Amino acid sequence: MKPTLLVLVYLSQEHRVLVSERFELLYSPNEGLGNDRSNGQTQINLRGRDIRFVLTNGTNGLLPAEIDGMPNLELICTLGVGFENVAVDYAKSRGIPVCNAAGTNHKAVADHAMAILLAAIRRITFLNNGVRHGLWRDDIPRPPHVSGRKMGIFGLGDVGKEIAKRALGFDMEIGYNSRSRNYQIGYKWFENITSLAQWCDYLIIAAPGGKETYHIVNEQVLNALGPDGVLVNIARGTLVDTNAVATALKEKRIWAAALDVYEFEPTPPTALLEFENAILTPHVGGISPQAIHASVVRFIENYEAFIAGAPLLTQINK
Image 1: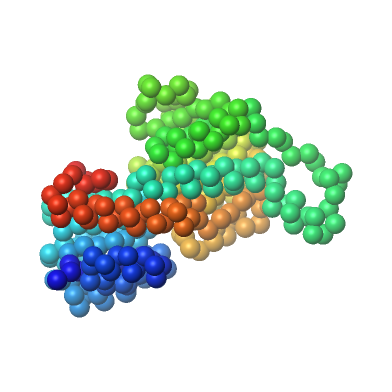
Image 2: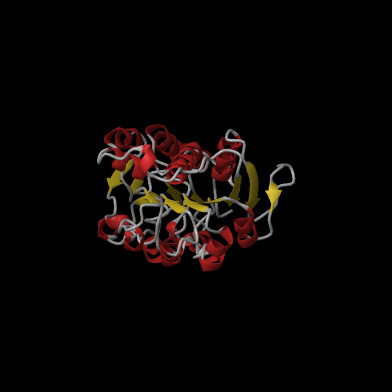
C-alpha cells in the first residue's frame, strides 16, 4: 500500500503523475498563497490519521495546529527553498524532519535577479512602452550603463553566490553581508546591511525571510544606498518595507527598485504601482520548467532517503 501524501501547492499534471507513482496523493493546493487554508484543512479533517507526508512551500507553510491534525506525520518537505511559514521548531519537537529543495532553483533566481536589475537600470519597460507611442532616443535622458560598478549582496547563500558569478561577467566589484563571513571567497565583507548599502551601487536582497530579517531594508538602508542606487529583492517580500521604498522613489532618494517579491502577495504592492522606475514581477524568479522539475525530484530524493534510513539531503531542522 502506498503511503499517503498531502500536497498543499500546485503541481502540474506531469508532476502529479510522477509523485503518484510512490504515494496515494491527496492533492489539495491552498488558495491565495496561504490566506485560505480550507483545501488542506478539509483533507486533514477527513484523512489526518492517514497522512504520513506533506509537500508544501514556504508561503503556504504548515501550522502547528495542522501538524497536530496529522498524528502519524513523518516528514514535511517544501517545494522550493523557502520555509518561513512552516512550524519548523514545532515539527522538531514532534520528531518530524523538515526538508526544503535547496540547490534546485538558485540559477533561475539569479538569472531573474540580473534581468530585473538590468531592466531597472536601463529603463527597459519605459523604453519598450515609449517606442509604442513614438518615443525616440533624443527625447530622453541617457540611462546609465551597468558594467564596472559595485554590487552588494545581502545573503550570500546559493542564490547570492550565483548572482555574484553573473555580476563578475559585468566586471562588477562584489561586497556582501551574510550570517557568517566566508574567508574563502574574495568578496568584500561588511558588518551590516547599512554599511553594505552605503558602499554599493546595486543592493541585492537574497537572504531568508522571517522575524530576524523583517523590514531589514528600511528608510535608513535606502538613504545609505543613495540617489544612484538600485534595490533588487528576489528573496521574500517581508525583508523590504514597501512604504519606505515608495517614499524613497517619490523623493528620488534611490534610482530604482526591482522586486520579484513583495509584501502581502499576491496582492500587488499598491504603493509602488505609480512609479515607472519600480520594476515588478509576480514572484517568478525561481520558476522555470527545469527548476520546478528539479524541486519535485529533490522531494522524492528526500523521501527515498527517509524511508531507507539514510541522511536527508536538505534537512533544515536537524
